[in-house]
Image 1 (cartoon, rainbow, N blue to C red):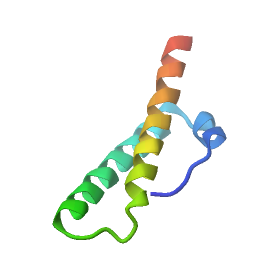
Image 2: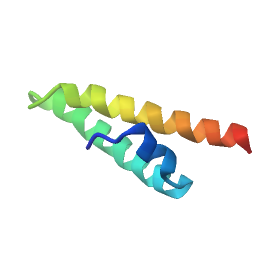
Image 3: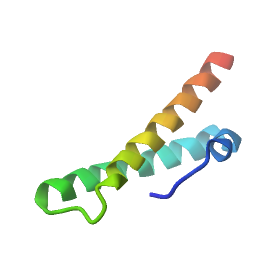
Image 4: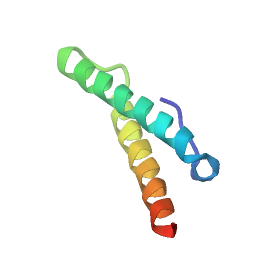
Length: 67
């Protein structure tokens, strides 16, 4: 996964956020499997991925409340 700024997330459409969220969840799943099976190259990727998922979900919930 890559680092995304909050301003970039806010400028995305709901469809783009949904795709990014799906990719982030898939990536987190693969990282968790990799952590169980073998050593991770960078354990900080788990934390970064969780943070990205939380940011996306927060922005999506704020948008729903505005509607």
